[in-house]
Image (cartoon, rainbow, N blue to C red; front, side, top):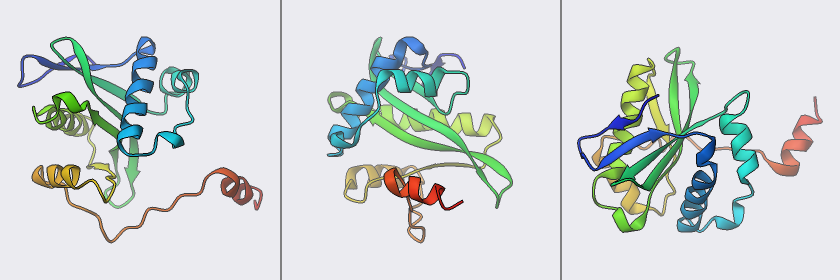
Length: 168
């Protein structure tokens, strides 16, 4: 994946490498802080390095740079739809720093992922948004995103995950 020029000549989207691990962690923490969830961040640079750039990468990240400065990031991975029989892209995190919001960088990041999905033969680009984040919800709807309100997210983690695994 090469650096992607965008419709804004001052904004580029580039793939990440091992040298970006601290920057990715910083973006994750900034996003978590914005969402009021910083206390839930338990990862560290070494864990990210192993899982993003190790022998079996589990996700990918891209950085958006404005005039050479990192101002946005997206972290995503492939999923699969049995209904379409095709892969999809699941966007885990999208973050644009507050001081540059409103300049179209979030839209360019999503457009990049949409193009990537098409280029990879994916049927979908999907993500979650917190139900209190009305500005993000309105923004996503303006791009054609449809809320999947009939679906409820379920999660098993921590001790519950361990307990479930022991039932095998």
